[in-house]
Amino acid sequence: MAVSTTVCRSQYTVSGAITNPLAIGFLYQLPADILVLKYVAAAPLVLILNSDYTLDGSNNVVPIAAGPGNVILGDKLTILRTMSFTQLLDLTTNGLNSVANIGAALDKLTQIVQQIQDIQTRCLQLEPNDAAATPFSVTARISKNIGFDSSGNLILH
Image (cartoon, rainbow, N blue to C red; front, top):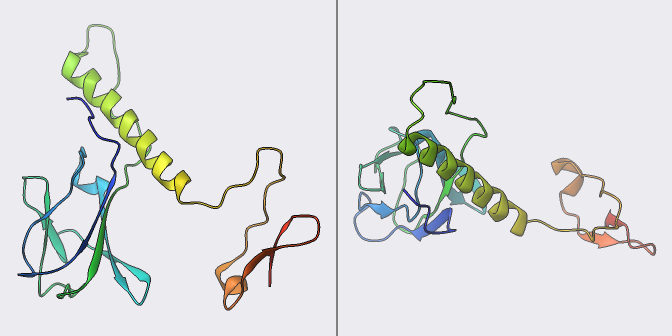
C-alpha cells in the first residue's frame, strides 16, 4: 500500500456521544503505533488502549466513556502515530521476500520519517552554525521565560 498522506496526527474536541468513532486519518501498522492524548489543564494524559479507548478496525479510535481516562464531552484529544524505530522485515536468501512484505517495510520507513518531520516542525530550532542549546529541566523552567543573552545564547528569565 502506498503512504498517500504526510499527516501523522489528528485532533478532536469530543462532541455528541462520548463513544462516537474518531477517524484516525492516517495509516498505521500496529495498534501499538497509536498514541491517544487527552489534554487536561494543558497537560497531556496518555489514554490506554482497551481501557480508555478501542480501535474499531475501520481506522477509528472509539473512546470508552467509563474508562480510567474518563473521556467526557468537551475533552480535547490528540491521536498520534508513534512508531517504534525497529525493522520488522528480515531479508533472507530464498525467504519470504514478497513485494507486499517489502512494501510494508518501506511504508514503515516512510511513516517514521513523517513522524520525525512532525516532531521537528514543532520544536524550537537553532541556526545550523549555532552551538547546541543547553537543555533545561522541567523544574528549572517553572515560571520562567525563554530568552537570549547578549551573545544570542538561550537562557531562562
